Image 1 (cartoon, one colour):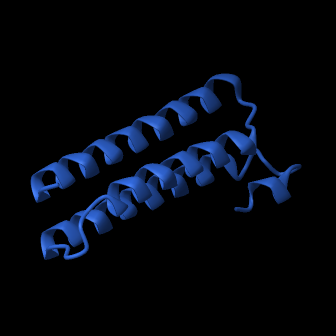
Image 2 (cartoon, rainbow, N blue to C red):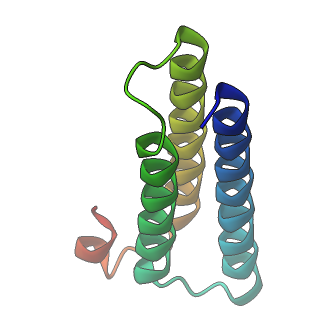
Length: 100
């Protein structure tokens, strides 16, 4: 798999992560009730996507590819943290679920 494919995959992963987070945030806004589990699932899915994207690349990664991976990770954590921020105020009663 070439660098171009790899970067394409990264971009795809990034987009899908963004979309997932957007969807969850929107659904939170709609019904106001938050299931911490939902977020857990989104988070797991994202981890899976990123791991798959990263693992399929051959061992000798170029600098650019490495940077790309970091960017993806950064976007992921940002997205996850923004979800956490949305969640935190509402999930007071089930705090122990939300800590992951």
